Image (cartoon, rainbow, N blue to C red; front, side, top):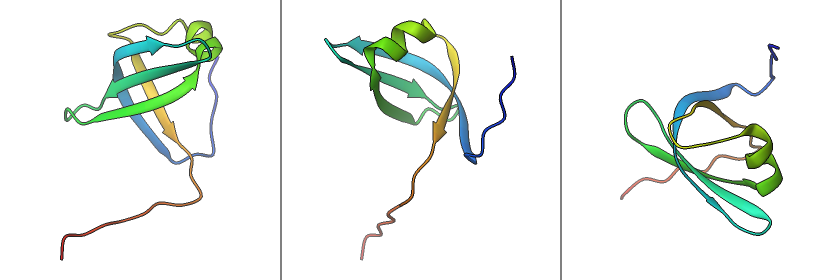
Length: 72
């Protein structure tokens, strides 16, 4: 099954680790350049996707606001 999404910020990544809690799961993924992103998803979603360390995934970022900072 192929799904096309409206979210433009789709980043190919690899799962580094998953920490399962009672309700939520913390998923750490690494981008090809080594930067890491941490995502909090439901435990049900993590288990339903069968996520495990080493899996190739797509991190999809959908946000109404992006903040930018700069040292001055």
